Each structure stands twice: as C-alpha cells, then as structure tokens.
Image (tube, rainbow, N blue to C red; front, top):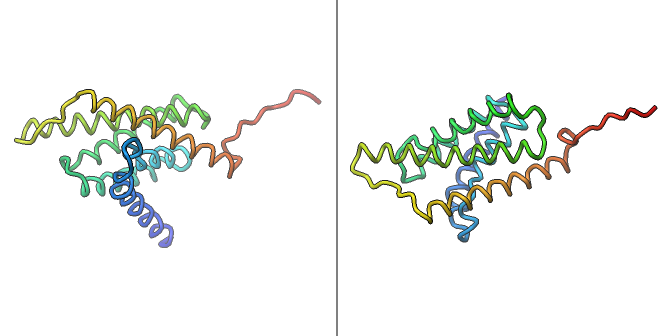
Length: 176
C-alpha cells in the first residue's frame, strides 16, 4: 500500500516536472501539448474517477507552483475538466472506444483551456495584472494544443490496445 502511494506521488511529480521543464522547451508546435491533461483523461478512462481527481488536484497544485498565472487557475481547470469528462464518460460514452477517447480528450482540452483563460482574466480584472488577450496567436495556440492532445491520446489508445485486450471490441457470433 505504501509502495503504491509512493509510486503514485513519484509519477505525479515526474509528469509535472516533465510538463514544466521538458515539454515547454520543445520546438514550437510540440511545446503546446498538455501531457498532464492527457494523462488525467487516460487515468479517468482506464482507472477511476477518484484516482484521476487526486491526480488533477496534485497536477494543478504543482503546475500552479511552476506557472506565472494566478494561483488556482490550473487546479480549477484540471478539476473542472475531469468532473465534466467523468460526467460524459458515465452518461454518454458507455464503451471505451476509440471515439470515446477522442471525444473525452477533446472536451477536456477545450474546457481546461477556456477555464484557465476565464479564471486568469477574472483574477486579472480585480488586480492590476495584465489581461490575456484573445487574438489570432491565442487561437492558434489553442488549436495546436487540441490537435496534439488528441494525437497523444491516439497513441495511448493504440498502445493500450496493443498491450491489453480490455478495450478491443467483441463481436458476438450468431452462427452455430
């Protein structure tokens, strides 16, 4: 039990450091990927809501420590994205198919992006900080991040299908 907790903490810290230091230093299109959000949605689909909620809280706290944005923006964005993704997973996507993976990462990415944007602008409104301006480069960043998150989720989906038979479709035969 203690080993599992220790390994989860180690994984959380490693992924947060990977996102903050390595991914942000990648060349232009690849620096937009949000590995943490992809991992959160993947853990939600493969694991459970409780584990993904703890991961979201931890990732949000660590990313708020590394970020220059107002504190709480990543926590709120990750938590809200996971809660909505869980709602969609439970109520609309009964199977864990290819399209469910893509739809969940699409919804979580869009929600996370706009929640962090709205939260940061709301905090900036009450302080003397600068606003985040919505312009063409902002929209380009959002579209690149969305595409890269979906591509990484595709890789995780096919890797999971290759290593495990759990998500493969089963066809019932009516022949005797």
